[in-house]
Image 1 (tube, helix red, strand yellow):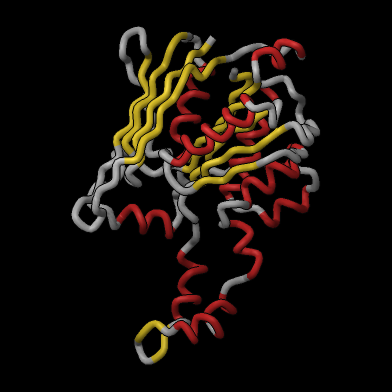
Image 2 (cartoon, one colour):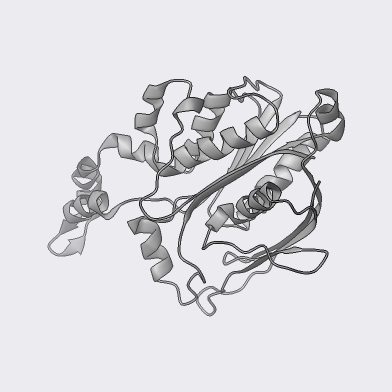
Length: 291
């Protein structure tokens, strides 16, 4: 059962402030935008689930995340590249002796895929199992599968399922710019989270059931990436009339959870179906119900 939703979507130049959820305000100096969005979206989901503003979730809570492509700005990459070149060619020796010194050590804390999970776990004292997948929308289904399995086998009582994509930066924009099949919408920075619980546990603590995951399927259809570049296709539609839940732009790994959270915040209720053909050869589908 879904007991909480939370999401953040940011356009150009926008920021978000995670400080009210941080264990220590000083932690923010170690955070990049993907960490800030993750903590805010997770905090909104935890609050909407009735677990409190800054709960200590403990050993019976698990964290399951998909994290988007590694973000980095050109102003920080350029000095590294410049110092990794010798006689006009890339040099591993130069990279390992001079290049790495051009990057401030704290920057690595702001781009690594496991850092959003670290900041969420410390903010909400999550001490149970965690899973981090990377980097696309298809990988979220791996995290969803692990979260559902953990609940079904009794390993956790609360599963925080989320995804984040910091995409408005040099490195990610450069990646998408190389593709033949580019995203259909503008790249956005986004994070989405849901709180999953067993029905009995949610009812025992008096939590409202906000929705349900009615089922999902995941498959892998390999192809030769040197022969064929796959375009990504994704749709979230209402079962009643087939109307699509429109995304404001390219939301990356966070797309499904952001759209579910936005739909939950509206007045409409009912069944939703998600279908995905991802660039990394994952095909997946799921059905949800908002109550």
